[in-house]
Image 1 (cartoon, rainbow, N blue to C red):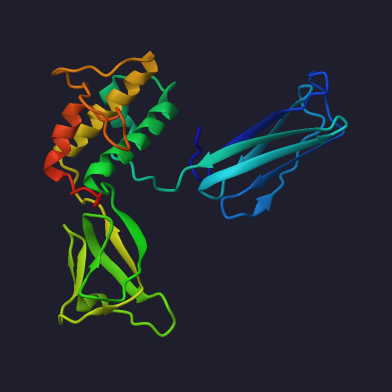
Image 2: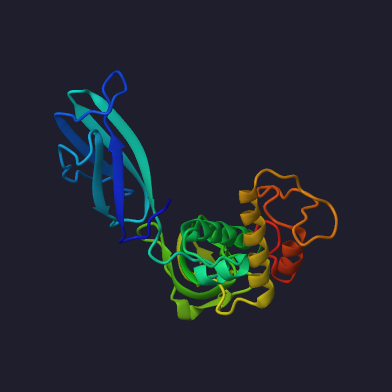
Length: 272
């Protein structure tokens, strides 16, 4: 289960002797490796409240994948786990409340699972239509002399900077550039060539998420949620959740009706 950035993650481990019996160790230590490669070693209460069952509460400070390694002595024992932390502002296509409403869920017992599926749904939708939630994108373009740059995330809303990557290279003032947000094409207003490599920073996404996109997302969420009911086979026919053919890269994750709703905003292949 991913944790929100800033939330406290409770880390747990069991210490067992060579025979498999829970036992208290003479020493107990835990090392957390953060996404940036730094490490921290919170103090471990020893002996634990329950024999052989150790816990540490760790307030998260970085988004991303963490590794957690416990090491015990007398008996010699070790245990490794992972911890995922969400970014501060995940670009989800709709709120938890909206997702629960569509799934007709009224309790909080499944909230974390719904949030994970909303994240997965967002990635599925953006596979077809590009970024939905507005975000900052930074990318490097390895061009020589070029008439234009083709940004990789559309819709592109505004340029922040287009800067030289190499010392002595040419940077370009945003005021001197023209951005076609629908295609992501950036050109000099004076018609000149652009010299790279260049690092472009810009905002991408949609100020308004139209109903066809949000409705398609709801169908995908409900389709994915149905997997909790056990294994099933894709059905052919006219039902909203039928999947006629697998989609390269997504398999049977997208029902036909959702694809139809996304069609008016679908980007050309290779542009999403």
